[in-house]
Image 1: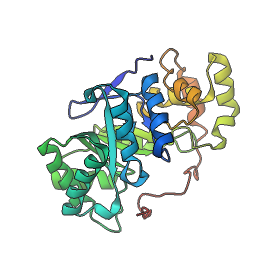
Image 2: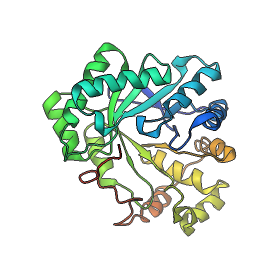
Image 3: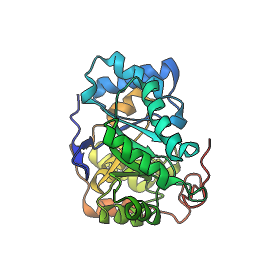
Image 4: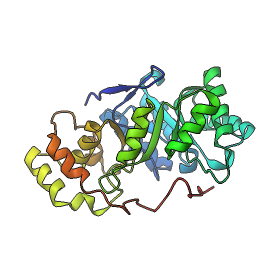
Length: 280
């Protein structure tokens, strides 16, 4: 079983350097898939209320027989629950669905600045952290201005900002913004969610050079940039391979050659955090 390195958050807690994304992983088949990932060494499991699978993730944790303390469990607050009381109850309901007593990490899923309630949600998460039902609190898809408003109005800096990052959407600006504020960047869709990036000649060439698959090359690229990738893989061999990225190292030139694949229109679904209205 692969041993995954950890990164230390700004609140002192540690999280694995690679996690398992569970978007669209549901029901009994989802439980079995997550169980296989746990057997392969995954301990960081990423879910969300809007994924409709918190119950499946919680069930896989219970069936694994592994102590709860060995897992790093993340879930996320949907936009319809941004008001303080709604957020407080939503956190409790997420825990009940998962059968857990605390989250290792809980994120605001999208800022939804047009609705303008994300600061209230942040206060609810701060208070939930004080009660011990969340260990680390963070955000997802936040831009620098959203981060700064949270910090200015509450005095509490997010531990994590989970954003879209892959070679077509490199996000150098956001990585710098997070680093300057002491925030760890996580990447959702780190492999581009089935995009043509896996067929790029530079990635294929590096895979041949290092005897790795293209997914491993891209996950290593994330790791060397200081980003924590959260890949989703339904193929069990890919799932196992995604953890085996710590036995080689890309050169600086190779890392930069992947970053040069970035596009001005590289977002997968055009989801601008300043405009995007999250699905309810």
